[in-house]
Amino acid sequence: MVKGYLMAIRESAGLVFGDDEPFAYWPTVDRAKRKRKEAGLNSIGLHEARHTYASMMIAAGVNAKALSEFMGHASITVTIDRYGHLIPGAHGEAASLLDAYVTRDGARRSEAL
Image 1: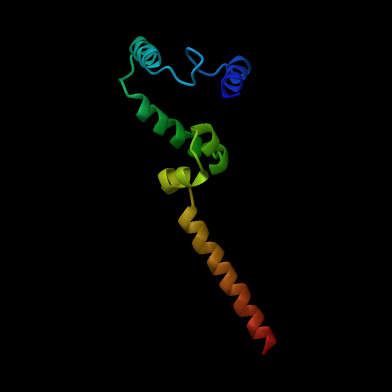
Image 2: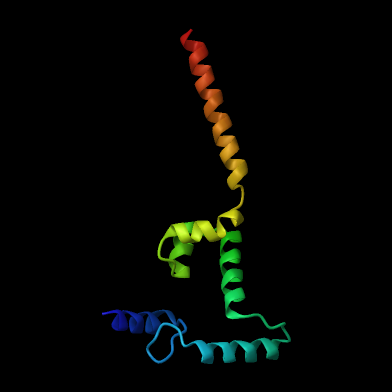
């Protein structure tokens, strides 16, 4: 079932697959090195490219659940643990939400007295 599913994805989405496997490592590495050299870019490994992709997706505003699926993580927890620090406004937004809650709750208590 998985093999058929991967074939359907390859045909419909144009994703990188090789030998009916989801990832043919060495041909992809060789192709990436060749393309970077042709473009005059510094060489980075596929691992760095993967982190760059995830970082750029977060900067573009892609939600964590979708990114988790795109990255192939087993769960969203993996994605949040690895990339949560890059999610913009996480700490500031949390502080603002708490402040608004406390302010509303305090106003309700004052009205009840």
